[in-house]
Length: 302
Ligand code: FES
Image (cartoon, rainbow, N blue to C red):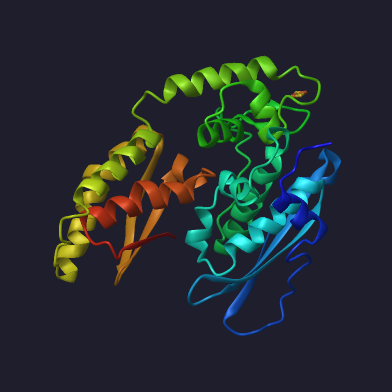
């Protein structure tokens, strides 16, 4: 018997927001769906979002889940957490946030919170027309666990986001290694590589630097710029502070247009096809431009 919190049991016995959301043709709203998992692997989640087009706000969220107690509770918690958020705000919800909302999950059940986070991303990416690539044909996305179809990029992400330090934890979070076990040595190698790389000047360190810079500059007043000056400054910041970091990671960004405070960019190379491209937009580009140019800027990929 798993040691579940009262909140997990409450949302399992009386789940909130179970069911689907159908397209009704209502003007000004769109329905987005994201699906993760497969019944063959034991858990599957289909998440439905009703989005107000003009505000990007999630008006309603519902789920259909095939899975265990914690899968149903995690799905229900997720829908409660994201209703009323904008899509950008919802993208900041992590699997840890879902587990925290539930008062914690047994570590062997953390994959249920990961499934919720991934279904949310899938729904938002589908809504925005961003392709969800499998990465199976690039080196970093090579398939590591054939029993559960888990790629290296997915394992790397869960290690980084949850500070995982051993292969058993990775199994608990994404199931990799939980079948025949032949991939466990590879997972150990990936953990070591991620730990070594965390000391390298990669995007995570860049995000940390951005956060530090923002903290130190929050006291400073924002510049008052004409539109022409604003566009020139955005281009300068992209060229001098953002692109060199992205290029070092195999990606790039190009300024496409500026409409008021909306900055439209083209993500290229690894950034364009990466499942973390939205994080790149928000952490590496938008935060930097808000810091350097105007706190009102919103960055969008085209
Ligand atoms: S290949 Fe990963 S458990 Fe079998």
